[in-house]
Amino acid sequence: MNAWKYLLQASLFALTNPIDLHFIGFKSDILHHRCAKMLDQGSIDWDDFRFVLAIVRGGSVSAAAKQLGVDHATVIRRVDRLEKHLSAKLFDRRKTGYLLTEAGQRVADSAEAMESTIVANQEQVGGSVARLTGTVRIGAPDGFGTAFLAPRLAPFADRYPDLDLQLVATARLFSLSKREADIAISLTMPKEGRIVGRKLLDYRLGLYAAPAYLDRFPPIVSREVLPQHRFVGYIEELLFTPELDYLPQVSPRISARFRSANLIAQLNATLSGFGIAVLPHFMASDYPQLVAVLPEEISITRTFWMLMHADSKDLARIRAVADYIGEIVERERALFAGR
Image (cartoon, rainbow, N blue to C red):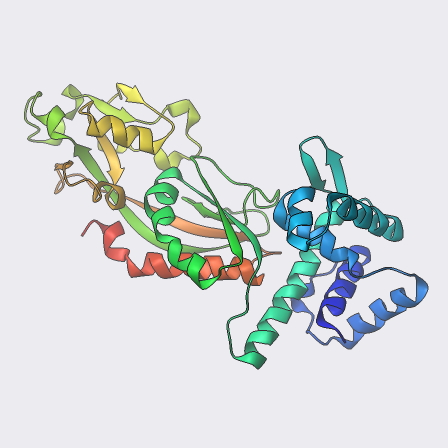
């Protein structure tokens, strides 16, 4: 049986029978029998499912049309036809674009899960790396995403030339269940929800200041004199996790004179000579002009976790990105330790 046709049969089966396809073998006789029975009862063109995945991956009807080499109207017509055959609404049509419904998400997730299985079988049989396609969105704190991850993604693009990456590098929590990201780098491991994660590593932070500040203010000889100095920090009411509330750990008497929800803004204020900031060592190491303040006395440790939704963690494209992030982090552990 044609692999793509089999993949799409699995999608329809999952729409009407919400089970976990990750535990069904590639050649499951039961799955094949049930889907074949559905084929006998209707006249669905299985190729229509490709248009659903193209919209999901491209983010719009126009992108899907370009990816598939057809016009805009054809994409809309094929999706409309599929919804009619399934008696299910797969997308909410909005001015901002097509948004998946719950039924549409189930179809897309199931199709991608089977696609991942097909890719894995192709790699085992062919002995070569499959050409993964689509888009993977990574959500990460601004420091990790901007300073560490973004400058190290070019080799991944060379390895997978047909796979697009999106990086949302901002100080916020990402809802994997709402598909705000496929992979999230987090400072905590969620205790609820269908989230699968693994610890990337512990990383260290310390106090840093620029000579432009240190030359103009009294020497910092001990922790006790720190409240007399100007500090840079986060806006407390905008903290998305208590893990970022560093200053009370340094001294309860410190109050930041400059605050920003963005770590890059804090870094730039520190470089300008505004004051002292708590910065990750992996960021500060890129700026040799920064001076470590009381490095033997003050050291803060936090943890990065890599999170994925349980329904999508085994998709080949997501697994490839997650494995790559794990590789580069492991390779540069010393950078995060401040050595």
